[in-house]
Amino acid sequence: MTARHAYDVIIIGSGAAGLATALGLAHGARVAVLSKDSLRVSSTSWAQGGIAAVLDAEDDLEAHIQDTLEAGAGMCHQDAVRFVVERGPDAIRWLVDHGVHFDTEDGPDGQPRFHLTQEGGHSHRRILHAADATGIAVSGSLEERVRATPSIEVFEHYVAIDVVVREKLGLPGSGCAGVYALNRRSGGVEVFQAPFVVLASGGASRVYLYTSNPDGSTGDGIAMAWRAGCRVANMEFNQFHPTCLFHPKAKSFLVSEALRGEGGLLRLPDGERFMSRFHPRAELAPRDVVARAIDFEMKRLGADCVFLDVTHLGEDRLQAHFPNILARCAEFGIDIRAEPIPVVPAAHYTCGGVVTGSNGRTDVPGLYAVGECSFTGLHGANRMASNSLLECVVVAREASADILRLLPQAEAQPEAPAWDESQVTDSDEDVVISHNWDELRHFMWDYVGIVRTDKRLARAQHRIELLRREIHEYYANYKVSNDLIELRNLALVAELIIQSALNRRESRGLHYTLDYPQTLPTPRDTVLTPSPLRLDVQASRRWRLD
Image (cartoon, rainbow, N blue to C red; front, side, top):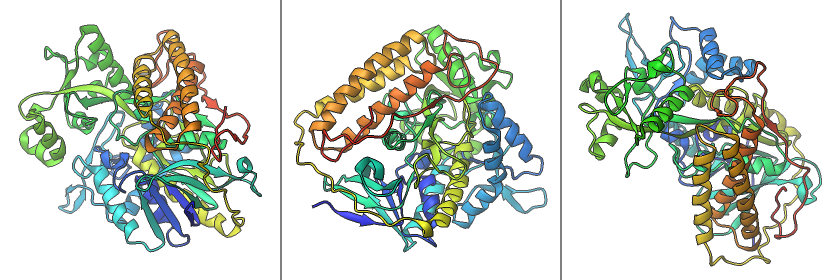
């Protein structure tokens, strides 16, 4: 028998976006938070740099807005940028009120003030941080509050499969009515019903072979929203972090941009600096410029990596502000006090996503998206460093307020059909999943990476069409598993990325193509719209879009 749960709001994801939304709802709603792993395993907890907000007297909101617009290469929605930036200081106060401790220093008057650092694209020091582990500080504090709140129930090791959409299942009314989720411990699929669902599942950087993201960044929210009938936008803009540690045993370890903000220098294998040839701000250029420059130099020289030199910063400074990086590099035999750090670019942030307003609403009534899985218009063609955590908190607070306002008017919830596995069997060919996963990530890296061409994209499109058909057949005939759910989502997101990249006939921001190296005079979003909803009865109660 299918287990059932009923709440006012279901939140999918346990990073800053999900937990901040849950806390915003806690005083007026019964909330369930679904986490794919333990609550603290999220992209937020991996964030090193910090969160951007205007708190220094020498800085101002207009400068933060202008820096964001410039980094976004003309694609940012100015109203979204202003909305988020203006609410930045209040978002910081909210985090502090919820127990987040940012680093401080003594001000000129002897009173403590926030220690602010600078990152690429920013014209001022406005990055609040907790040493070089800001994400852990934020997620840890929010987790403590969530676990201590009676109206919030946490379901760890649950992976969402699909949103329950009334029209698709022939239920009365319209909009979403919950989610189907796999209990990874029991292997059973359970129904979570609610008039409101919030997708806060993060980005899709695991679609690439090399990434700075945790294993769970498989585009689940974007894929579920697309299948539910939501538009997605600007999926071609995938941010590659310029500096991830290059070491065979260092899986996905990001070397914070804040190191360059404090004076770290990028060097070629022979020790020569090179960034001044690519941008006036040199090492503090926007991330797309730095990543492309590193990629160019590595290919020109046939080098495996470049090097980030911080030896001149001094041991005391490194120990005070970058203890995590210092210790992690030491584990691999790299003493950053005395030798440069080998680094390479890696997929880092999904700038596009599910189309939403500033309150997180999607095209499907009752369905919201917050954080990296969403597209608010803030990030444009290139996310500026440390704006993502800010967006998470600002939009989470707006979304929770909007849901609480609408909750008293919510329709009665019809009972969603039980998850029917009567027509599927256990798989005895899981090797198919692992092979498809490897193939997908390899051709996305080779053909849809930092530098693109129409020929590469056409090859990728051909491969993803074949792969999705194979995955569709597998999904229709075998019981779901965590790996199958993630592969299904990754393949769909890969197709959306490829199609978006083919649609953009210019180079702008994070999308650089050798076939169209110029930037068009008028910026336009790439918006994809799913085909009309329909019920697919091939695999019991599972559904999908063509």
